[in-house]
Image 1 (spheres, rainbow, N blue to C red):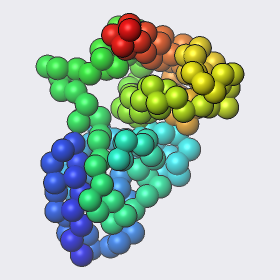
Image 2 (image 1 turned 90 degrees about the horizontal axis):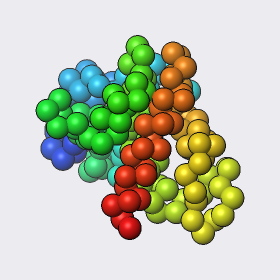
Image 3 (image 1 turned 180 degrees about the vertical axis):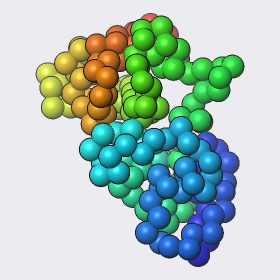
Image 4 (image 1 turned 120 degrees about the horizontal axis):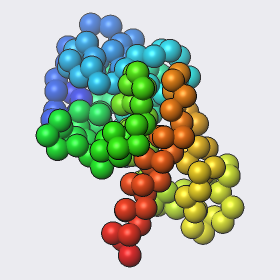
Length: 172
């Protein structure tokens, strides 16, 4: 069966021989987009986080055939080596990675999380539903689906806080 996936703004027609192919495997094996990592393959680590139609998902938990016509963004779609996205730059500045395996998923999740925050989505620790403040607890809660085996969490939080602060300054 053929399925058309729009990945990073480009439509790709894939011949899927098994409808059980995960979105993660389609991205990595069929489109050679290896920035999205296979960690646990059970939706527990977040290394495979991508953004589909503006929402972050674990690509290991969904089938490629389910995303016909969806807009999929991977780490390759948010920055290039010569033109890094603000979160990518902040992760480097704040040393928000050690081994780097979780970093693409962390950055994709943080990208979507900042948009969720901008739209006023509450989390489990949001005190004021009218306008969630970006405390360290708020960041940690919103990023809790992404694990880092090297324990770079304080630096990841610092990188996210920096980018969120610059976005808030730009909006003011």
